[in-house]
Length: 317
Image 1: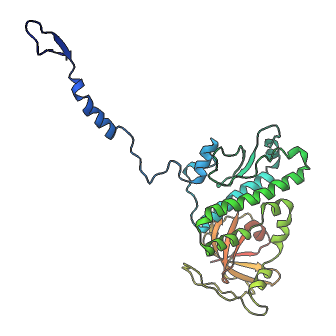
Image 2 (image 1 turned 90 degrees about the vertical axis):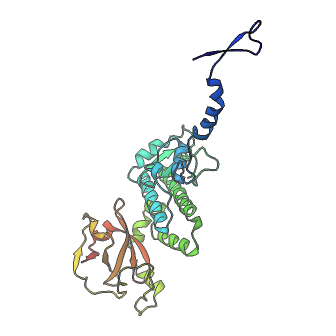
Image 3 (image 1 turned 135 degrees about the vertical axis):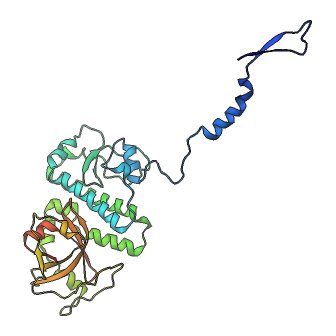
């Protein structure tokens, strides 16, 4: 409602002006807007919860479940991240190699092969951020595709993929201390590289039994020594080999892996003709692999189907 107000000279020569009451409250409303009108930002909340998510956002694409994935913080988390990315890269270079080959068109722009934390793979343009949130894979793998023999080109991609996997793993592990980095490297080194898997060298390496590893730790003729184990809620398994497996069941190659969760198992070493006890500390059902801890403190990552196909894995009850 507009009110009329006469000026000081009202009367003989006065004049009227129209005054809007909103003008008087405008400064007060402005202050309220400044105080409460802007969104409140929680300093403890990130828009993207992890380097993976931020880099995926920079690519303009979703890498698996990256937008809701937290960056790995422990040695076990980093190793699982490494294992899943590695599994994705192996799929691209072996089982899905024809699809991968077609996607690496030399007429396209610089392309990279990514292994994702969910075990998938993708061929994408590199991150636009400089520097990127994560180490980047080899750039422009598609340009060399038609200039080399297919086998040699795939081997080159595999070697660069191994280097990238190590870079990502130790990017996450940069804040680890020396012992944690050593644990991470030992866990990674227990797996065949992407190149070894592609070239067939991994099959020879896996078939070689763990006798050499024991010989490097334990003098010949002496039983493996027990080592202290951190946060072990179970009694330390005996390091001595057994002539016969303990009560339980032999896992089949195509069997369910549910029983292996945190299970105590026995592994048969053909060279020794003995069963050695171990504990499953990590299980990857997608890759059908397990990380086991021996009584000596040694850690090994096993291909379950390969060992089970030989009847060399006993699940203790």
